[in-house]
Length: 475
Image 1 (cartoon, one colour):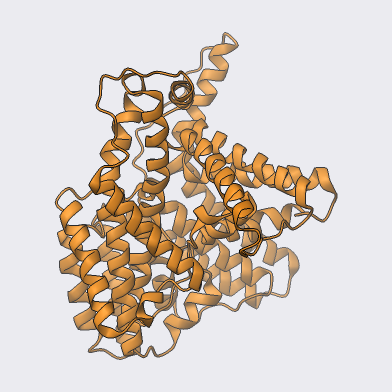
Image 2: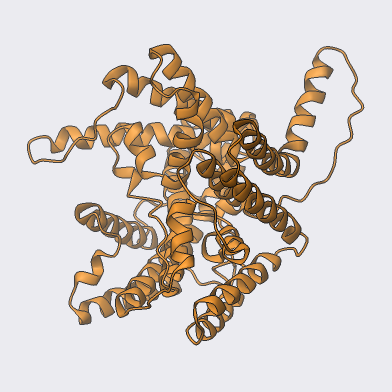
């Protein structure tokens, strides 16, 4: 059940109508049932995996907390981690590692007879696996206490607004909200509706409009001019930002209607003036998870420059692999690992985030321009189907081709101009105010006009008839 589907537009009002009539315990049970129905709508068989993660981590968390034996605590943590990573590894990475092994052995003249399985990837498995793993790790570290109710914990694992594409929440933030009485205020409703409208505009209005333009040029790069390929790369950068941050906005908006606050996952990342700042603004829930549960345990920046670079590289390589079982995602992660290492080399252990002033504005724009193009270079590997396709696309940008078999994307297309200028204006206002719902500060009549404008643009340029899946659903 996609957010951008008629089924969800029917599902959500029913969930809310019943939810508002119940007390806390009944609300949680109702949300749990709704969440499992939501997830099972893709494939009911996925529910078994969700149930295994829930039961294993609930009891491991309780027993870790109760045990005073360090060895027992460590073994219980290993049970949790191995169970979760085994499920994730089998369903997401079995085919990749087996095919890579077969190719490696073939290059050595060895013929391997390893069975290849046609495995269906469960939706959102990477997201909820990381979320539930962090729960037991935090209890082991003494940073959190176990949840008393298995129903509440099951809701934490399967909470439908953020189940399939994040944000990846921490137990310390989400569980207390699910365990306590929630008050739905007028502010909650206004914030929720504003975020939902913003999210649909980004996803349906912008991302889905750009998708066919981008898809054609990444599929047939030989038939496009070099300038057209470069412009389509810029459009993909906008597409993936709007697709993913649009999902997050809808998820946060729906959650606000339920009286629950989810973390901000994007903070206008393309205004970043360094790669370090980009990763503090892009997919924040994943970047902070990788920092806290991988980079710092590896040693962080505490053991010298070379070890720091090693830790950054390992973290980003695994971050790339988290996105998908393919060498192009590993290359994407490796590029960002290299970018971050250069940032550290240039600025030291904690690269600064520069503040904008009138005096340094031009220099800030130059840095923003450079960072955006470095990110776009890495996006080629991310978007292409494989590494040869990525290299072919990159070669096409620098080939200097002026003749094309497909029509060039018009830089001055009214549709593109309206959508991109509107999106840029929204991001500039949010960045300047550091407030994702800054438009609620407007007078009521202007709030209504703004919402009406976004809805009109979404319906005029998008619509939900095509139901284009969110890009990050594949992860």
